[in-house]
Image 1 (spheres, helix red, strand yellow):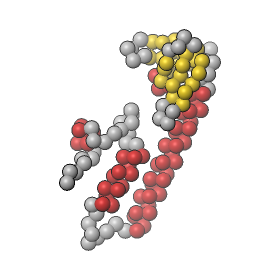
Image 2 (tube, one colour):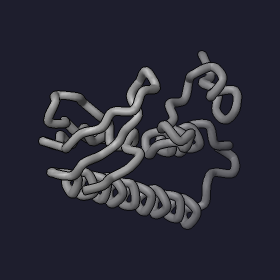
Image 3 (cartoon, helix red, strand yellow):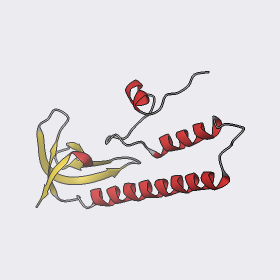
Image 4 (tube, helix red, strand yellow):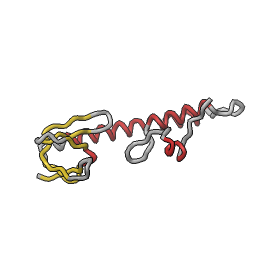
Length: 128
């Protein structure tokens, strides 16, 4: 039986996926909760109140993440028709007017009038 590492070891081995900012996502939290339940001591199992509290924390975390994603989608839609400066993957600065926005589950993509594609998190400046 293989044990999946958690914490710093997991991050160094790539066993846990993190978001771009290094924070663990809701699926990682759920995996940890399931592992805790699976490997708990049968002679002193988790208290029901403690389990309900952890499930409430998970539900709260999930709602906050959903609100954050919704806010990011609304924020990217506000970029339509605006001029932006953004950094590209090569390190150059792209400048142009936003022609369309594509929203996904985790990221928002801006398409400029010249056809350039920019991720919302790469926007450096918004101007008229």
